Length: 147
Image (cartoon, rainbow, N blue to C red; front, top):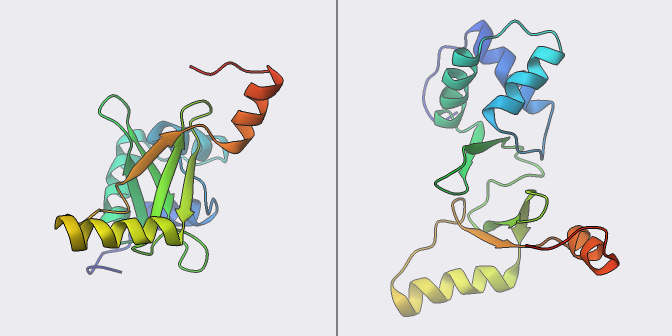
């Protein structure tokens, strides 16, 4: 944990929920709706507040994908998920999925940018936009259209 936190009932409820969905990114509304479906009595304001605390504590990542939309939140699973400096992200413009990308070539790009251009990429906030493999297959079959 990044800094000392008083772990309230709502904090622990939110942490437990986020731990239950490893590898999934959700909006605040999706988190709230899913928690309600699971029987939680937590309020929307509390969801916002506790997510901020979890981000500050280093338990959850916040991904702001563009200026129009809200953020996505994801539990930082130390074993399998994104918490490494070399983890970048790809956002599918067709289905909206956020994909973790750990790739030596992208890591080389990061090093190149720093070494040759004096620019340090923030991997957590760097998002490549395009179409995921699953959606590309659907586009090729004609079951969805690309924009």
